[in-house]
Image (cartoon, rainbow, N blue to C red; front, side, top):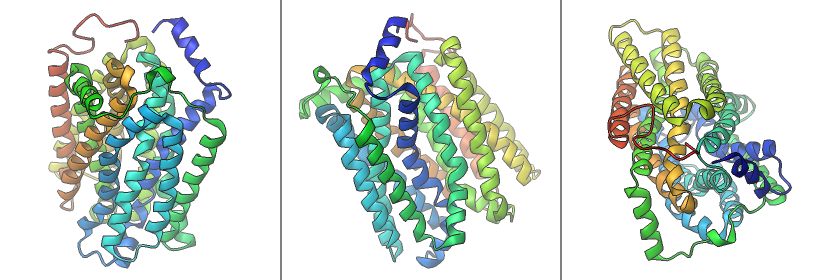
Length: 417
């Protein structure tokens, strides 16, 4: 993308400046982080209240949300490509408000799981629309920079969310967390209604027709970069969910230090934010491949060292915090760039492409994360081993995608890459 194109993209947002645009995208993305991370301190209380027999079953409160979130993404892209980003956003986030209230009144485990699935379904639009709106206006390295800046703000939520959840628990029962989620989502709806314009150009609207959807899916799933980096994102996302699923039990059961959970979780998320900010500063100069491929190799090295350290019996809460912080920082450096590279060749069908890619990466990541989480055995070994395995698989996928070449495209890239 040349400078003229980059500059002209800002004119696609009349009435909203660049800073507000990034903040809105981050706020939209944060709905899902709040929906997951604010729950973590409340899981023991929810388990007792809802009569959940086994501790590992509590992970389904997180997994149900992610499965609903991943599965529903497939419908939002075509809707957004047909009717525009704005009406789909307003309707779906309004639905999230309602489903959060339903979850607040759940009185059985089955009801809670159903409510969490519906929460995930209603919030799935945020992932699709955030990516689609950014792709409507930016591409290549500039898109990666915008997503990284949004990711910095977005990561403030995982830093704060467990603490917010803990504070709410000090003031009232766990059900109040869902009322707070409903209130936050209502603010996003009002913000969008008052400030966010439509970003989809009329000429890019696509009819909802089986043939067109099949054609779009074929493009997304047969394009080498789109498919390869979607699979890479899937694997790395699985490592993040594996950590989230296991984290509360690791601090409470492995280290007997539940009081340090929110502090160290915030430290880990904070380093992810630093990594995303670093990415926003260097990606346009170094390129998405050089940054992400280097981060992936570092991810494998760190998780391998972590596995050896944990399996040797030397793990402490502080070694865990150090290893996991570096691991998640590498994830942040690789993840946003993988997503940008997956979207780059399919920008003309951004909504549908984002849906399909999100469907694959979220559902696949949820399965991987649940497998890692369910492997919890009182130690950190299953988490470290799971992260190492997905890192090695992601490297294999990248090598296949790039035909054995790392750090630069396997063909002469366009100017935007």
